[in-house]
Image (cartoon, rainbow, N blue to C red; front, side, top):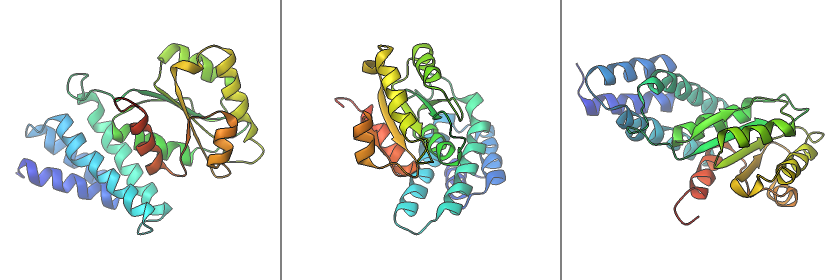
Length: 217
């Protein structure tokens, strides 16, 4: 049977090449031989997904490769999540996220969710076509550190500003940082809409979210 280091290396490689079935086998094998769930997460899964992000940003990976690796990460996390306890793998905080009202695109949002969960956040995914009021309700219920919202159509871009305004009017804006993204979005639009930050892709979204919850941020 493989030792701990071999299992971690193999799990890292599984995510890197997008082997969903292999990643589950490796998680199961690691747990069986006593590798702590947090070790599997922080010494294999997260570093591998960060490397996927780096390869994407450098142009060595393209969207299909990133999607396949994200799927493998999601599958591995489904196998690992029941074994992660609050003491074993403390969350960096909760992120409420969704695609704004009128927009049903979810691929980008789902990739960001995987990257954020892999980075150590707890995700509350509201799905697509999310009314502003639902974002407000989720903030009150889950008390997130970050709210992420996306729009993938120029016609639904204004709903980002509308949703942020609803959060302000509800009196819960001061308790959260708001990150936005999507194909037609850019940093100038994000600032004008009242967001705290903009990320052009899933990898940079995870990096930005981690910086926002860092001590002293």
